[in-house]
View 1 (cartoon, rainbow, N blue to C red):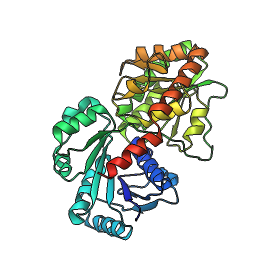
View 2: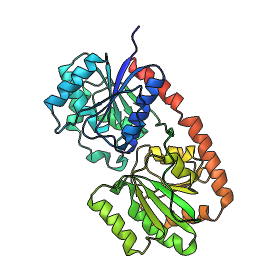
View 3: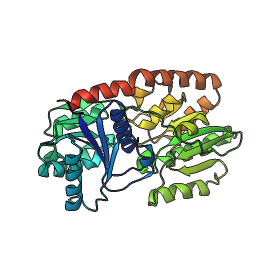
Length: 358
C-alpha cells in the first residue's frame, strides 16, 4: 500500500503561529512515515530552515488570488508526488479550493487559525462559505471557531484540535540583553492584536517598583504603522535601556531558557503557540483572558490570567510574580505539566490522522 500523501499549504513561512504549526505538522507526518509535503504560496521566510529534509517543499510565488501559473504548478507537483490531501491553513483555503476545481480527486482539510475571536461577527464569509462546500473537514483551534463554522459554513465534519508545540534544535545565537537583570519575555509578531502598547505601558509602571527587571520583545517586525508606533513609544517613555526588541528569531528554546517570566497580553487569540512554548520552557505566565488562553493557563496555579487591555491588572500580575521566586517556580512546573498532558504532539497527530481518513 502506498503512503498517504499530504501537502500543507500556507501563504508564507514567516514566524507566525499558523506557519509554525504547518511546518510542525509536515515534519511530524514525515517522521511517522507519511508522504509529507509543504507548500508556501506567496512568500518564503525564516521557517524554511525548520523544514525536515524528508519533507517535500514547493514555493509558488503566487501574485494574486487566482494565479493560473501557480495553480498549474501545484497540480503538477501533486500528481507527480501522489498527494491526495491538501491541508490548507488559514487564508490559503481559497487557493486550495481553486486547486480542487482543476483536480477534482483531492480532499481538502481546512485548518482555521483565525485569531480575532472577539470579532467573529465581522469576519468576511462569502468566499469561505462557497469554498466550504468542497471541504472534507474543518479543524478549528478553539471551540468558538468550531461553533462559528457550524453556524456559517457548509462542511459537516467539524473538529476542535488543541495546538501543539515542539522546540526545534537551532544554534543558540540570541543573547538577551540586560546583563544580570531578571527578564520578562513576550513572543509575538508586531500586530495590533498582540497589544504591545498595553504591555509597554504596564511595564513602565512596573519598572518603578522593580528596577532590576527588563522586558524582551521577540517577534516579526513589519514595516507597518503599528510597528513604528511601538518602537516610538519605547523611545518616548525613555525605556530603551529596559525594553529590548529582537525581531524574528528561530532559537526560541534558547531565548526562553534565558527568561524568568513570560507574558502574552493579546486583545484576541485562538490558541497561541507561544503560550504552549512557554509551558515547555517551564515559565510562569501572565496572559489575558482571550480565546483558549484561560483554559491553557490555570489562574493562580500555572500563571495569572488578567483582563485584556487593562494595564493596571497586567502590571500587578507581573509585580506579583517578580516578587515571588517560589510562585515563579511552582507556576512554571505546573504549566509544563499541563502542556505535556493536554497539548502533546502525539495526541494531536493521532486525531489528525483519523480526520485525514474520513
